[in-house]
Length: 183
Image (cartoon, rainbow, N blue to C red; front, top):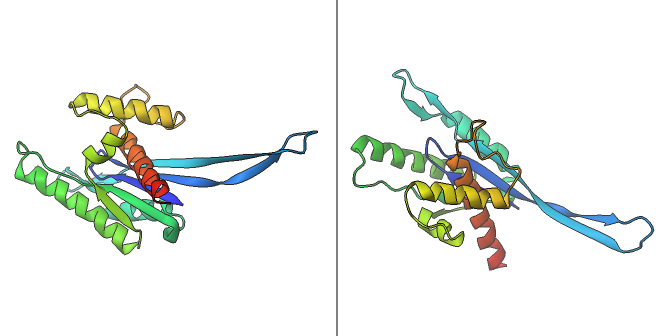
């Protein structure tokens, strides 16, 4: 099963967690098999480009391509899309951009026939005991994601936290947990 987490903003990312099939290992000289299971992860930043005015916009064709490639078997995928919300102090242009990006991902998931659930940030953050407190929220998400996925690239070479990647991974993990609790 593929669990896809989407942090839909321009600074966001798409993550997929795939359950790896169990592999049976036999220790030399012992007849007792050892079964190892695991997961594979993949994280990509949201594809964006600059328009003719130099403004950042979604690269819609690449967004579709990345999402389609991540959901290698579409019928065996489930996505969690972070529900975007605007803040009262944001401009109307900013609010429009946030809403348009959120709808873009809903449309792409629908077109690709990937079942999905929209979840507010507070809901998935609560599962990881992340407390809301501005910039500290990003640091907490990074710490949890780094602990769960130590090999994931969650910072730039200069050490800046890539919070979109952290969030996308945790959103996918949240979706995986929802499905496992349902079974």
